[in-house]
Length: 126
Ligand SMILES: [Zn+2]
Picture (cartoon, rainbow, N blue to C red):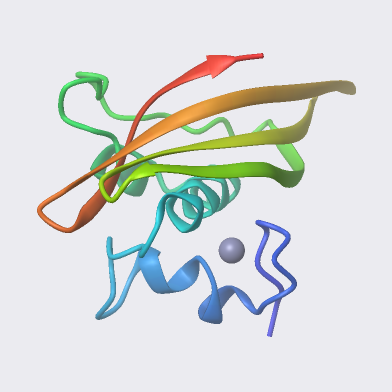
């Protein structure tokens, strides 16, 4: 069984895979779990999941494209701060490589929970 790309050291099916498909689809229990599952969705090219977990107020009008040429190297979650029961921020660093060049995305993302489901709202690049 392969390890989850989000770096949790859990098997994919016991980690982000639970929120991508199956009976618990879209039921990530907190903002960090949702953030990890969105990173893994980028790795696996799950554009529909990225769109479905994007808050309707900030979601792109068109389909979310994932770039197969990008090689994702890893995710580091630096901080998960719960604001109140329905708001949280997650600070992370995601590393990738494209055409031999290394990229490092350091972002603080905002998440909101509505009707029991967490959504990605927006992010501030650090
Ligand atoms: Zn995972």
